[in-house]
Image (cartoon, rainbow, N blue to C red):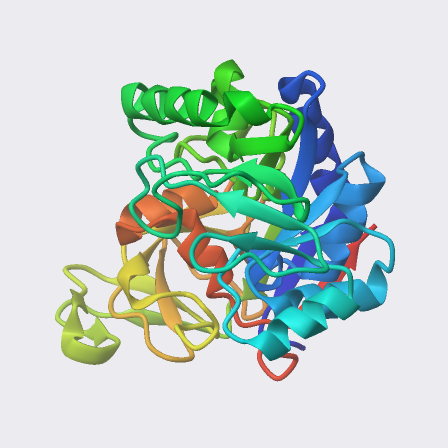
Length: 339
């Protein structure tokens, strides 16, 4: 028996792509599959998204783009991060990748997107030069589409004003949050990552925006024991039983991506929500049970109503960080892709 099993439902990815396309009302959907598809598998997600109507793929590095090019020889692939060397530019040119330029010279012989800084304060040009022939797109990056509507709308209007003269080029600024909530941000294309995976950009239940979580994570109880009053479980004795308490030990820990700060979250044990107690260790965590259960009882960490958004809330982080941190190495977990 594997210690845990991670499932990726490509049917959910296709559903989410179609949901986003419906919200975009004619603008193109470009699937953001950087960081191994946010931990879901870049190639698998890319194929599902393209099959559901996405017209482009976005990655962070040239190397990520080269790996995708092997599986998708004709797809539009945009490298959004900075390109570090002439060698990388040459590789991108040979593979017909598209590069984003946010500073310095504009490379020749390949398709380029100019990135304008409208308030993100990170990568981006302070103002747009007259685009040479290599430039096929103009873009910017929203800083607060999930939290501050007024600033997001201000960025959108800044971008609109700065690019009005170049409306013949492909313009794109929308992320998942903007695609779902800001009609003014749609322009010609939207770069959507989080929502594509069925995760809410707003930290709420994804179903509120018609999204289906694509990621599942299941394991089992490896040990069940009765703690007597005054007995504890885990490092530091963070959980001490006040009365006779059944405890289940789950063979997953922070080395697998179940973070130390997830103490207090809930997982589903034998179909019921149960609280994680004590210190999460490298290879195990404990759950408080209401009764004795057999070893091997299923434990759902993600899926079946157990939301990454809830885990993120407990850990005071964002779902991006949680899902990108999952360890799907076959020595730690079995990975299953559902059609």
